[in-house]
Image 1: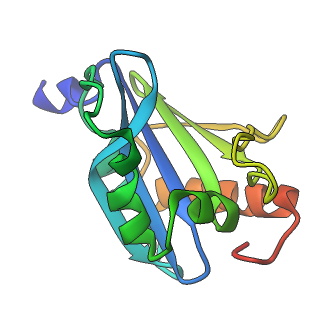
Image 2: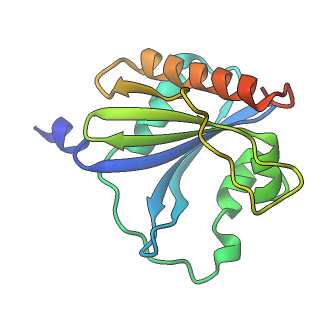
Length: 166
């Protein structure tokens, strides 16, 4: 029964693949409805085996999402993710990383690859890739979970058109 309670409700996460590492973090919605990164924020080497990728993603998706208070200082919201990624700013993270948005609803997990944000406009967020979504069940092994994430990174990198970190 306890195991089932971990997967009630919904949860959000983001996974970023950079040239030398992968950063996976949980996201929570603020009272205004904006998704912001929260702990855990996990960093793995780029060549991490699928089991490690799956374990990290599963850890970020456990438990139900809870409304998070609006930050007092919005300029510092991404600092922990930027530090984990080893880049100089959130803008640089969005321009250089391959992004996978992850949404768990109950025991179903949707992986949504996104295109890179334009280098010329900070107001243009990354967008979901049409037809590139994948859905898996939380009951699969860590290796299957990690393989699904790695495949989503591959689809996103190909569609974003660059070997920068793809």
